[in-house]
Image (cartoon, rainbow, N blue to C red; front, side):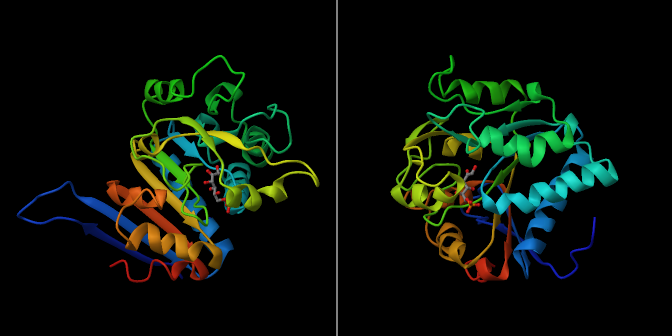
Length: 269
Ligand code: F6R
């Protein structure tokens, strides 16, 4: 793995006052120059975590931001024997109404960009149950618990502050549930579908409380288009208007961003 010596890393504890002692919270911000460097640093965080806990339970995200992360992990699996195949994974979300083998499904995305390349056994990979499956969405939270809980949850962020497919207005107590996608999210993801194909209107996503149950969160944001969402998530008060702001309540969050997205993180300390 190459060095990311240009990274600006900051760690600080939040919200500790003598009058009202609250649990210690760690927020680390790692800022790199380019999206590629930020993706490599994110892959290094994941790789280092897997090396420290080889049977790790990973929460995984899809989206364009994650493609270079999975490329790095696949390469390190090939060249440096990074053992992703010993991990268990739970993906954040999946569209409703698409067969698993639809090229635009998140199942297809994960197989193509990561699972096939690193030899993840299918039984170790999990996706939220979408319509037609025998399980209710909430059963996904039970499966996660039975696997021992998520050790490291990887997250992207939507321009409107969504995490998973928890759109603005989502209650922080939500478990895995069906959501109606915002028009802006469907528009942002239209490029993942063939010309003329409709982006599904609904999806199943881990809820905010499902995400916050992970032991550690690793959020990657790249590009100017994510700057405002990042700023609102970590500098504005916690609010359902920006679902990512609930991450302020999590005890162990690492944000990795490039300089374009970092405008929203600069004043965090
Ligand atoms: C994907 C997911 C979403 C994306 C977000 C950013 O599984 O849960 O929250 O992380 O929409 O997507 P990109 O990376 O395509 O900008």
